[in-house]
Amino acid sequence: MSNLKKEEINQEVFDLYDAYAHNRIDRRTFVEKLSVYAVGGITVASLMSAMMPDYVSTRTISENDDRLSSEYVMYNSPKGGGEIKGLLSIPADKKGKVPGVVVVHENRGLNPYIEDVGRRAAVAGFISIAPDALTPLGGYPGNDDDGRTMQSKRNRDEMLEDFIAAYEYLKNHPDCTGQVGVVGFCFGGWISNMMAVRIPELGAAVPYYGGQPTAEEAAKIKAPLMLHYAGLDERVNAGWPAYEAALKANGVENTAYFYPETNHGFHNNTTSRYDEAAANLSWERTISFFKEKLKG
Image (cartoon, rainbow, N blue to C red; front, side, top):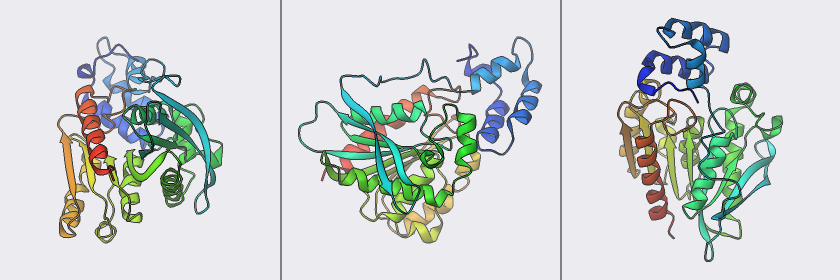
């Protein structure tokens, strides 16, 4: 990762990266626009390094961590992409069956950050599956740029079916109690919201900075929600007031947290958008929420 500190980076650079990461501008335009902010000792290369993910030094839990067992599995998504690959992680010290958590990636496939989040859920005491919606196209390609391009070629409603199928896979796993929740980030936040719409028996949903369902869709939600939003994320936050009103109108249990002065993607510890305090607090809240709601 770049030696630049987050405080040295202009907020407009984070906004540019958000546009790039969500396919609103291409890489060439992104690099060209970055040059405006390469002043003093700050270079375009250092800004690029700060924005791009570092998957080497940021992993928090090894694949071989003795607190869990972790392996890739295949499960069937008949209404989605067919056979889907996912990283299944199970706590090593579990006594009997444990609740499950589906971990949903961003708009670039199952990258190392999301795999790490899946392992974090297992270390916290849950059996987790982190599916790769890019499986029908060959799977996560090893870098996020190509991953975003690949994911844009898939229909998001078909990908939603893949994650609903992951819920069914986990619910029926012999090590799972049948109580299953979902946590997702960015695109995965929208998936988490929509899984709450589509699955009446979903145990809990935790969308991170995710797009919101319509009022009509929100009326179908039965699961309790915990929603995490970045304070500076105007694009996603604009949809919250209408969603909040729909949830309230339909008596849906929900708690929303806004983390001041944080950017979209603040939980992702591989880029300079990461905010350690907000990431840690939101994750502690998420795990406590799952432990409370997935007890039965």
